[in-house]
Image (cartoon, rainbow, N blue to C red; front, top):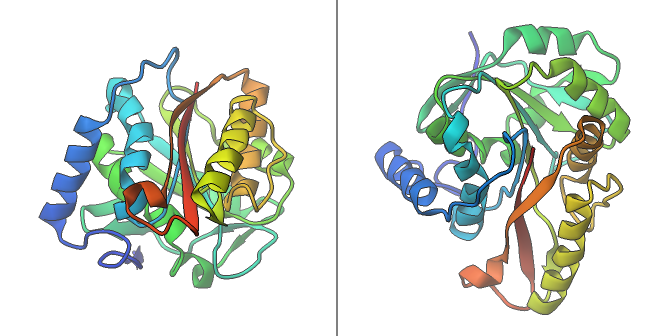
Length: 261
């Protein structure tokens, strides 16, 4: 058994198990309750350092309260930040670890994915990538036992992603999580305006977002394409920026949390 060890614990989020657990529980318990009209099927959450985006991400995971013991398969989609890739990328590992423990991969799903066109296996991409890892502490705290399908989504056709999601979706015991930030390196005012437009397009399930609007645009467009096929509806939970948490007002990062069901 091979284990992916945490790449950014101690830098982007807390490495101490007890402090991280307390932080997760506090955020999930304090997140304002927003009633969802149907069972959450897709969560969209940011992946910056927890100081800046943790509370925003918690808004998405708080919607799982009613299904915390039902979810068994989590399909986690996110971008590669360090290189350009034009495939869906799986890890070689069997388990993903965080300071909160280990999450086993869904071997049935992963083995099926390895045989699909457009899918590669590359640990050199997965090992340092933070976009997927940043969602794991929330999943470990919000859910009971589950199996993970971690996919780095490169520059691929949204329909390819949607087809994969169609095949992997098992019904109400499945959950799709898209890890993405929104605007980057804009002023606070410009970021708020751009993110408002992006949020409106997400709520319209518009699968034509670009890299300048969301770093995880390819994963997001694929999930939105799938959501359209399923007839889902979107709900905005929070829009915020790094400046709202004390960051530079002249160069901010935008964060958004959404649920589709």
